[in-house]
Amino acid sequence: MIGNKVDDQMELISHFYPQIYSQLAQQQEEETVKPQRRRQKNKVEGRNNTSEVVMRKRKLLSEEQVNLLERSFGDQHKLETERKAKLASELGLDPHQVAVWFQNKRARWKNKKLEEEYSKLKTQHEDTIIEKYRLETEVLKMKDQLCEAKKKIERLLLERKIDISSNNSPTSSIFSMEQSHFNLGKFGMEGQLMDNNMLFVADYQSTYMTPWDD
DNA sequence: ACATTCTAATCC
DNA sequence: GGATTAGAATGT
Image 1: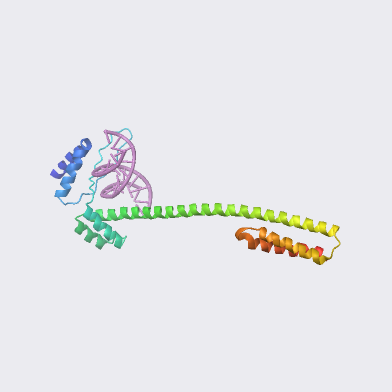
Image 2: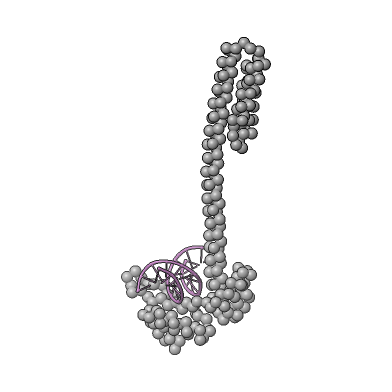
């Protein structure tokens, strides 16, 4: 058969002169709009056998073809038989080619979506790390402030103890002095954490003051 | 559906 | 001109 002979020739050309072959093939494809045929079995045979010539008539789709396919894909990712046939005739392609294009397109699309999702999660993760670091720093600062506040309270309590043991003055004067100490303490605190510290001081006061109030 | 192969085109 | 890449086509 003549067709087979031509194919054999092309096969040889494709093997030895791939560039020339691709030009010829492209020309042929453009002249005869006839879609390319499915390839026949062409595994590369055997480990030490001479490698078989692999013949694959691959033709890039034209821009218009791709545009139409893209638009169609935009409408719907699935391709039912009817739409496939319609598209194929509009594009001058083998319906199988259209099916393959949709198959590959779905794969590319899925891949793209996965990559988008990945980079989204990645930036989210990075933001979270930064926030975690910020919070950890804040915790350290607050611990430090708490430590300072405790020291201050210890000092105040110590001073007060000394006052009690060495002074016989009325309790009312002690009380007022002590209030002023705490007031000083309040203003000694800094920043936005002041409210919390004030609460803490108040709580500390009510809990630990009672024994001496008796 | 997914993995893989293979090729045409492009980059350096 | 060889390494890389996109994507058409094949294999499972």
